[in-house]
Image (cartoon, rainbow, N blue to C red; front, side, top):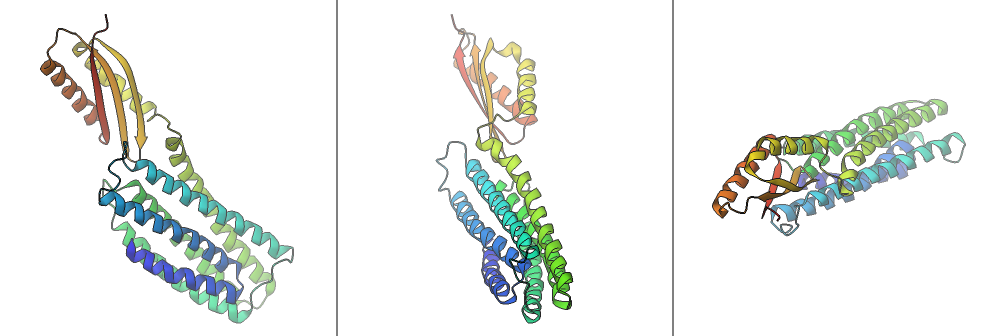
Amino acid sequence: MLFVIVMDAFMVAALLLGGIVGGSLTIMAEALRGALGYALECFSVVVLRRIHRGVLVDMEFGAGKLEQVASVVIAASMLIAAAWIGLSVLHIWVGQRALGTPLGLAYAAIVGMVNLYVNVLAWDSVRRTVTADASLIIDTQVHLRWVKLVCSMIVSVSLTVSALSTDDVVVAWAETIGSLFVASYMSVNAIGTLRSAVPDLLDRSAGATVRETVSRVLADHAQTFERVLRSRSRRSGRTTFIEIHLAYDAALSMADVQQRVEVLQASIRRELRDAEVAVVATSTPA
């Protein structure tokens, strides 16, 4: 991640310079997206460092919510960048935004090729950090890096066509197609991220699948307790937190109750690998 951030710092500066000097909408759009993404990558690294060093261990449900917040912010920044690109394309066709000069567009095309190469290196660097139990924020970074890589490919093609063409109409169409493709691609990915992260931030339950699994396991162990008083679940990042309140026969010893609780917890964890199961045992109400 630190390797990626260092490379991005240089590329954001180069993209901004290329956009200003070249006057290309496509390179300016890439620079805006890059700057927003860079700020969020720095935030992600700070969160990850705190997670790995145990600074966030006091959070009741882990750092999953914080990771989801980072995902939402990343998605929101992508939507903002996409909206800016769309508005700028409109300005080109109504004559409110001038096209870049040939020399400026050539410089922008060179910067675009370098940016593509850097994004390939960055994507591969982040991809190789992924493990089976990787943090949600790492998965989001890999996804974001893939989006950046695909966008930089389109940007590079668009900039090359703009730099080689001497026809203003061709340049305008190259800028429009490249910019709108990037904006659309960013919007689709941003909406997908928001759909997966926002419901959990709104404290939605873990979902029907988890509820059905818990109900099935409870039914299989119905003979070990008197009744279910309450059952609820929630997600935090990759982890599912399940809390079950059960009533047990008051005649049972504490050791018997504990043994039954442990068997029930083990059964649920076999069904839900990333589940944290808490069972609260009380005596049978009178």
